[in-house]
Image (cartoon, rainbow, N blue to C red; front, side, top):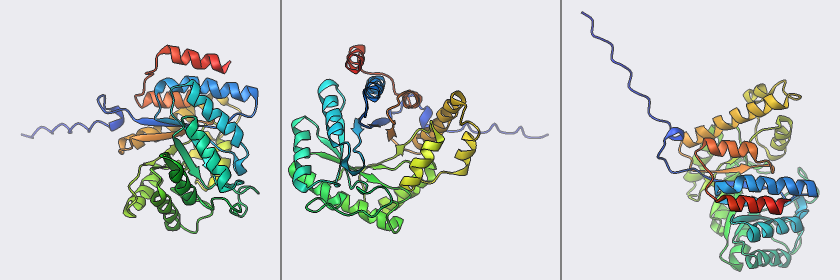
Length: 317
């Protein structure tokens, strides 16, 4: 008589499927608009994503400080006209310390208490040699220290799981992160990546160096593969062959590309959550629909009353 086979033990519930887990905290990055049409797109995206109550929303700073005024105007408008917590990007390039300090104080006076401090790209363009501005803050750690000296700002900085393109090694790049943390940074947001193991290996190295601030993964939902590949080339992020394969042949098939983009992004973020990630930063490129869908998948639901969304739509017109 044979013994009946035991039924396999049920698989543990994945964290991304747990009904009672705390919701993932999300934040969104936008860039300042260059035209009235882009302005409308930006504010439409903000109206779409604001009801998800993000931890904060950041606004980028153009290469060489080229969008300084537009960044400030966008951040100030978010602070005045919405309930969102804006974070202003600020770089070291093309400005003296006095000029940058004045920008920081202006943000403080506008009620903005969170700054994303970056060295910034060279004025002469990505890939050229960086030269600190005479009389300016030389590097991001100097900028962080300067901001903290001016006021009680929350300061986020960048982190590079595959190292910054100009760094000699990943260890040297982590030295740079350590200097920024020692200067007062309270959060690091990573450059985007497509292989989650890259992020977790980096996190292990960072923790081994005694860096204990949150290292928030930055996620770029890929709606345009050629554009994402171009971004990756400039930032030093690797593009795996499997990702190329998934978008292969879809250059002229926008609708299928959107479906593939949603599947790829869903796979990445649910795996991050299943492996313990509790905060995610989205590079939205001022497009809301895919990011909104991913957040819904993560369990986020609109929390802000419809009146705020209506008001945001009104100011976008």
